[in-house]
Image (tube, rainbow, N blue to C red; front, top):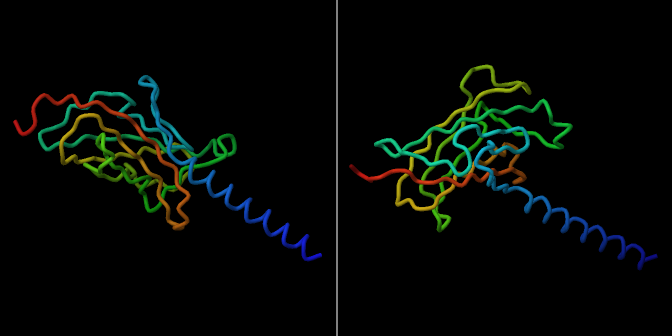
Length: 164
C-alpha cells in the first residue's frame, strides 16, 4: 500500500512540474508576419505592425493601438485580462534585451468592462540607443499568479538623426 501511495505522489509531482513548464513556456509569442497585426488571446495590436519602421517624434515616443475582444474566449481557449482599464504594460527592448522604453496600454473610452471589442492606446517613450528592437506587450496579472501572455513585436528604427 505504501508503494502505491509513493508512486501516486511521484506521478502528481511530475505532472505539476510538466504543467508549470508548459504554462511558463507558452507565454511569449513573437509575431513575424509584417502584414498581419500581432494577436494573442483576445488582444490584437493594430499599430505598429510587426516589422514596421518606426519614425520617432522629437521626444522619442510612438503610439501603440490595440483592441481587446474577448468574445471568442471559448474558441481561443483563453482571454486577455484587463484590470482597472489597463490592458497591458509595454516595454521596448533593444537587441541586447535591455529595457529602453516603457508605457501602458489603456482604454480609450470609459466603457471598458465588456467582452465586446474595446479600443486601447498607449504611448511608449524610448531612451537609449536603437538598432534592432522589439515591443513587448504584457498582459496584466491582478491575481499575482504569474500566468500572463506576452506578445513580442519586432520593429525597425526609421529615425535618421537622434537629438536633431
